[in-house]
Image (tube, rainbow, N blue to C red; front, side):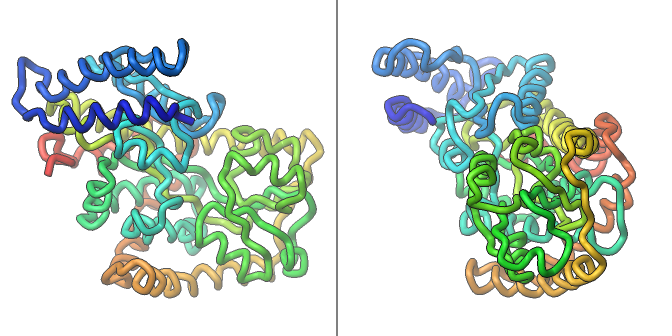
Length: 414
């Protein structure tokens, strides 16, 4: 968690630098130069206040907040993003894993300038990102209808395609002081449990960790109990019996060390993907301080980042399921009755999602938006559903279909 003195000092720096104009000096905007110079003084003050070793980035270095551990593939993907940007521009990025902001602190931390960019989970903030979360809640569409190999690649492509071109989505990111730069996400969600779950009777009464509202509704539809806890708390919750299962991607067995507490895995339920992700959102003032050429590099890096995270999850899922078998963890499939009921739930839930976002968050035309996103999911099943863990191939499709069409001179600038 970030130091409170550092937080206050950073807010003060933003107040001062917001008074600066947007004229440029050479190739570096003056506002950005002044911000970096003042930040160096403030960080020196923070170190005096909080003691040595609390902050190590230089004045010219951007700070990336990732609210998961250093071994998590999300952190590794952000490190790759920073490396690519550094090799192709003069922008230096330092990645802070768990030490600057946790997952729930990251969006306000980016907005307030505690971090310059970070990994954002919009699903944790249903009201603030209601337009984005409307379609993020449709992640179960990836395993409905036409079946594809890599559902994560599908939902990541569909989300990026939609949000970049959704005026209402863009407005809510601006209101939160951020610029959205794409989505990378996990593979199909399954059940990681402490006891077998294959029948309707198995599900009833069990406690399921859920990362978003649609998965909570799925559990409750079958008579289970949905428990909303952060991903970082899954291990302890399963180990202590607070939950019986976590609905998650197979790669979380490694990311969160869930091998230790998982006894049974049910592969084919609940299905779908967690889609409320901003892989590397930027503080809006930092973004506007870059040159057009720098923003172009960041867009290219973001396409690669979305592909890398998605490909890492796919490869890890294949690896971790096999490792689970070798460790004696039972690999199961839900019976036909459960699977049929699950598919029926997904169809019925579309109407529920539309009504919920109208009533609770004032989102307009939800039926039109849901229909549009459903078409995008079908489109992306054709484009990338067959791509396994070929990161370069996936990055190229993301670039060609979405990111290359974003104008670095105008995107996020108004």
